[in-house]
Length: 328
Image (cartoon, rainbow, N blue to C red; front, side, top):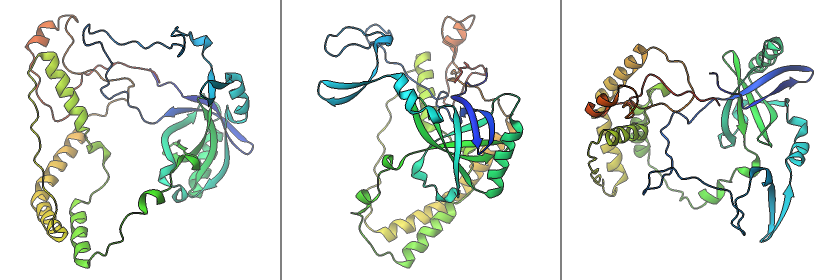
């Protein structure tokens, strides 16, 4: 089942228009998530929407948006009124201007999306817009309405498609001055900077996100597998403090020495992981949270296996080959 588009409409550059669909480029559904349950019964907690004054439950059709004026006064705003003020850009991403990518401050970036042609028509117009942006080495700035809110979106070529990144408005970005004004202006010696540069050089490498590991996610899966198998959970020992750094120069020297000692082993480990990643066959992207390895008691003939299985701590999350697919 293919992911569901967050938005469908038209991409327009002057008189050139094509139907497009917007899909989220990232997802958190693969992460382990939790529900809130009643400790006494084990039942899931259910939340009700109730009137703050009467305590009566309110149905969805009776719930509207309201802007708080004072303690007891709200200005009611209907969905139709919200749709009316966003009408111009509800179904069209109008490209307003082109800017150098370097001009976009990283603080303005919110989240990425994939923008693709919607249907069999419009591929020529889509390609024209994509290649025009690519040839000019710039980013196209437009507007799109998502969940009744108008957003600024920056479009740039990504292989055969377009990636759109939602941008924040200026009022959403805090000034750094109120945070950085109290930072002391200190003088650093050339020796300190040279030592620090050597440490950076020892740690330098290519950006390879496929080698990243979510250690907390791994620990979560290990914990849940152990609890499902009834394995006792040992309390984690409190890590020893490294103590306060008394002399910055000494700390830099010790850091450099430590990097020299660990660099060969770290390089071998990284190369091993890279070879393992290359050896694995690429998997098709599927939406939805992944199931964990240990089977749930009561499913088919897996009960005995679940009782006998003793989970081992894996270097990476161990998942079942079949995954629950979820649209969106």
